[in-house]
View 1: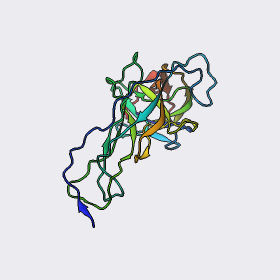
View 2 (view 1 turned 30 degrees about the vertical axis):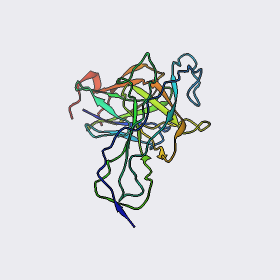
View 3 (view 1 turned 90 degrees about the vertical axis):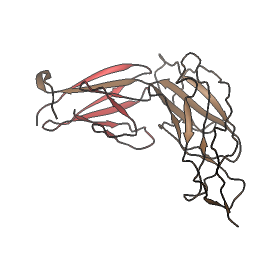
View 4 (view 1 turned 90 degrees about the horizontal axis):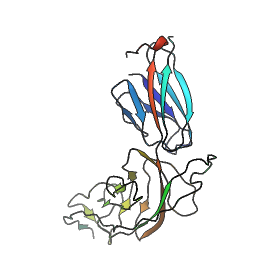
Length: 81
Length: 168
């Protein structure tokens, strides 16, 4: 499973939050065990940046803003280094 | 002269309060979108009976619970939707102050499908944090405001070029 950097500049507890595998994070992710992870407790209407990192691939970032209750599937295609 | 803390059975000391439901037109600061907004806002009055103290790192600590019915249409784990927990007081710890004052350390929402913003007092800007500090409770606390949103969710997956699976 690639690791994911999750950045929310509006988060009062820090500027950068990190999900790596099963490590705990301030803003949690849940590993869905099917190659996907999901965010938990996102505040709506705030732009967040998601950076996916995997060995042998270039880090790839996406920005996204979601309104309340929306679910968005983000499939990130990584380029080899 | 310092005394010795007797064995104390910790207990939830806050009374359950009725919710005040309110529909907002624009609950988030700095939010332009107007096509959503079914946010729930509840003013929480916290009333407590002092059960333990936490004056410094060597002193006993309190367990306190906040209760509220946030939204009757969307119950969150029954009606217990947020709590404040610290560590129980060790038995036999010396105390030299009476009465003890509990400190509500971290207020933590339990519901993983919701997002929360809060302000401790009316007029303060809304803040976002997964838990937050309430300070020392030496009297009833009123005006804490917590806004709950249905959390948006990003489901993230990654593939290589052409949709090939990435093995790490």
